[in-house]
Length: 214
Ligand SMILES: C[S@@+](CC[C@H](N)C(=O)[O-])C[C@H]1O[C@@H](n2cnc3c(N)ncnc32)[C@H](O)[C@@H]1O
Image 1: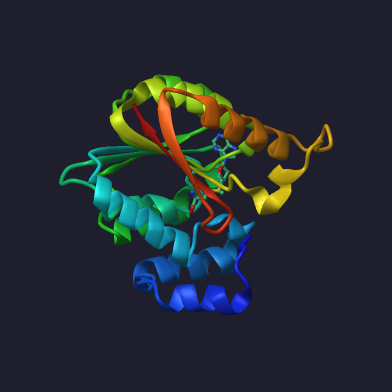
Image 2: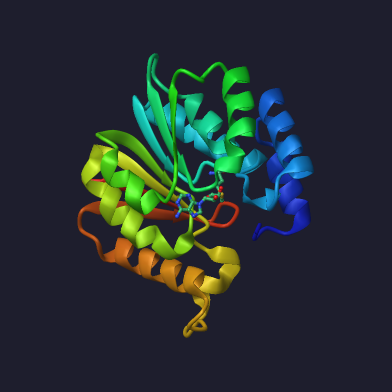
């Protein structure tokens, strides 16, 4: 979801560095061949992730929710020489498209992939990480935060996507079966109170929470 009106959104995109050709191709192939293509970060958010990665210059990134590999490639753009991106996804069918694009991006040796439920996999991955990016099932964001925070370096960052959830986080009493909205509200409220991090909620696309570990 984009909260800007179409004209402003077009203006923002036109005044943001173009999507690199490889990511444009991945974006297109994802739309043609993979279910739920709107899950992919896309042009603007991808450039934001790339810019943050260039600013942080991480040696080690942990991504929860790889999908077709778009955001992992964005993070790789600022990765230190020999750095690592650990990325988890529950859907093994995504592996061929991830492999194709990680190879084309020249980062196949930098990326370690894990297939399965992130709740079970995160405890098996060793930190410390400079960046953790949460972008899987929204219901479990707070659990992912608690599992990953001890693995983040001091002054490292946790980023979480979709924290505005198309505005649904404003609902005072979400339906009991709307576990994503309930999970995101709990996550945003907990982060705001947590003295272990400083945080800014950027209203970019569907909302990007940026936390610095103190
Ligand atoms: C929004 S997409 C990730 C998009 C990707 N970060 C990007 O920007 O290109 C969310 C992904 O999380 C995965 N996922 C959902 N629940 C999961 C879980 N419990 N453990 C691991 N991956 C999960 C889905 O299979 C899906 O590919």
